[in-house]
Length: 116
Image (tube, rainbow, N blue to C red; front, side, top):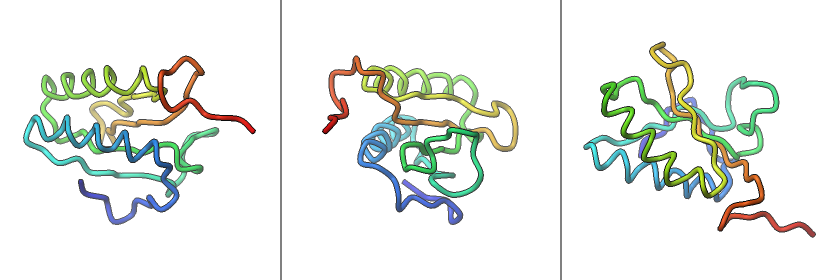
């Protein structure tokens, strides 16, 4: 997996490393290596989970359309039941990317946060 030179990933939480492993495996199935384009860097939407290390963006504009659909559906199928949101943002634009954030709803089988 590659990381864009401007992406800051030092604050990334362990759940996002798990998600990155899934992304890497799915990309490998189509002969590509994912590129993280954003972590806790840059300006993001209000209430973004990027700032606290619970969101990462991955480049998708280089993936052919039909293959991209397969990639996104596969990643969603694996990650969403575990508490992740998987969204294609800015589709068809220069900034197109796959946004993945860890935001559990409380019904997940694993990765349920413990309160003290």
